[in-house]
Length: 116
Image 1 (cartoon, one colour):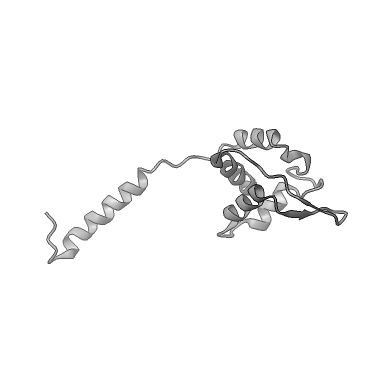
Image 2 (image 1 turned 90 degrees about the vertical axis):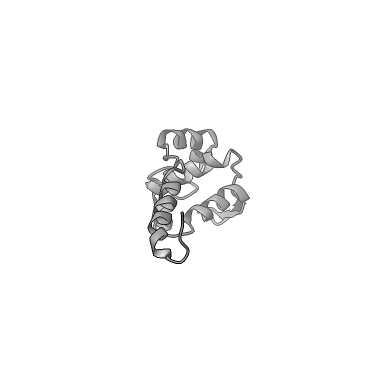
């Protein structure tokens, strides 16, 4: 029974319960092989490579640009799913190909990209 007159008696138990609740939420680990397969199937490697510049920046460069930024995943998710304009090395602009897939596949791709 919780004695509301003495909150310090039940506070540790409440924190422990909250911690167990958070710990029991399944966390999906990033799957690098699935991310690379998804990138190939989505034609991402047509314009990007891991280490060298093609029409788009190398993925390691993208990862370095966003590393440590709180909004990195949200920014990249928007970039991949919105079709926003991108500028190519020769200066022309095109809409980025919109990636349509289950959100968890796109998020896995982003996690892999940011891990490079």
